[in-house]
Length: 317
Image (tube, rainbow, N blue to C red; front, top):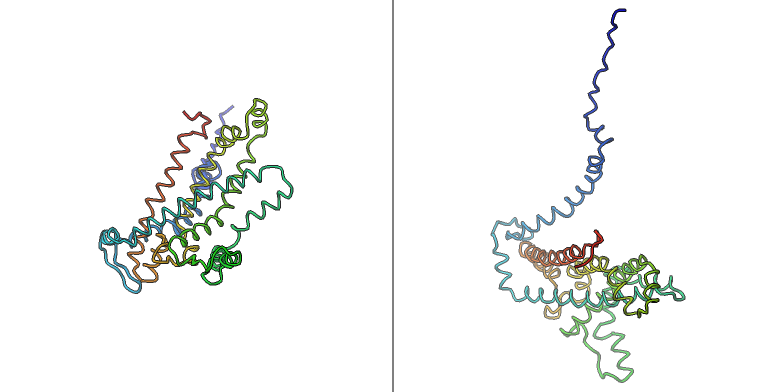
């Protein structure tokens, strides 16, 4: 028999096209799924950040195109006492408010994790300060601490404890205390509910075994609850510090940075210089000066988690 030539199949030219890679390469497919999110982050986060840093090196004003002046804005801020007061206020505000939010939030999380009547209702009530819009909360506290109509001053006067109203928002010390109190009231629910979710993941068998070995409630918390909650605490407190450090609405609605700049944070001072005074370059410089502080807060949390190596399940040596 004569050999019959068997026609060879033509190579499919589409084997290397993009569609085939999408079907067979999960990394390539994942990249295309990430493109919309990348575009969103670049357009709404990276571009404004880069533009703000660029403006900080110019003398741009509202209604006038600026010119490049290098580090002149930062040199001027270095000698600005109000700027350094805002830095001090921001650090004080962030440290005290974050510490109180953590302590109260952790206590509420532990309390709501116990078996008690109406627990679901109590959890819902804890969320109320976080649900209410920030400006409405600020206006409510503005009325509570008003120098003439304060319910606190009215109550203390009728109890005979004071003879005249307390000027809460007109005194530098009282004003700082009031804005910190308002921030703590608003921020505690975020910390409490997040830590409560973390407590739900702790196995009850660990507490049962520790109790059988004679462990007290404090020892259960010290050697079981706290170590297992550490990664969640690090993440929650990082977000809490970032939110507190960049707080604007609460301060601006309550005090506008007064009295005598006693409650001016870097965010409110930046707004005042850039928008109210029209000095966009100077305001951008103040905003850019916040970046090292925010990066420091993130790095502390990051290296703390890396040191404990929770993801690998290794011990903390």
